[in-house]
Length: 241
Image (cartoon, rainbow, N blue to C red; front, side, top):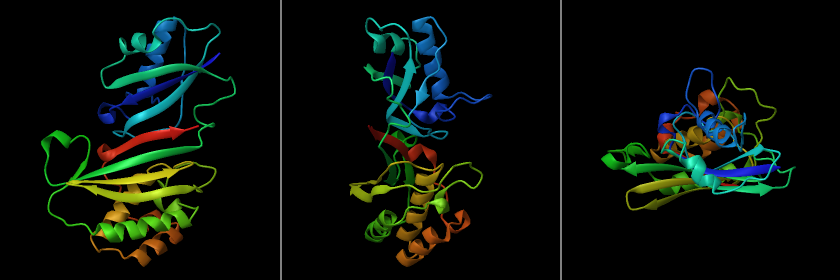
């Protein structure tokens, strides 16, 4: 039997989702909790990877077990997990449904706070004195929907079978002092969203024009793109199956 886990986590204390030999990861903590309540070794499979410090308001993982689960499984898992990882649901799915490969789209948000707010230090990138041209940033963001190859925004040392992604939405929205970038695609490359945001901020600062942004995409060269913005402002918010 295959079960899906829906969870949320604050990524501040973790070196990303994926298990690493010398660092604490979300996957490691979830493996331990599931293995403990089921009294057997379980390795969960995640819907994707989030980098060190990145948060997730919605993440999915799956695991297989022979017998049907009984009782309040989310409650049992949450009693073992640290407070910054919360299981929201555990449910039975078809055996062929895969947390990663069955996902049709993923959505991220990147949050920028205009000013200083001590309560949002861990959940946004705070820009204190620079005014951003949001209209230009949105004009440039629309260009992302015209392209498939996003090698420009990928980490250089990464092994992937393709740099192609189908971006279905990309836009900025201002709500008072909070500026949020919304982006959805069928898949994302390592560091892709943070590099896109860094480059769009350069557009907003008039360091890069909208046409320059197009040329940066077409160059397929990471050195032409902007900085990789801090991980703490990035949230995985939705996965659709």
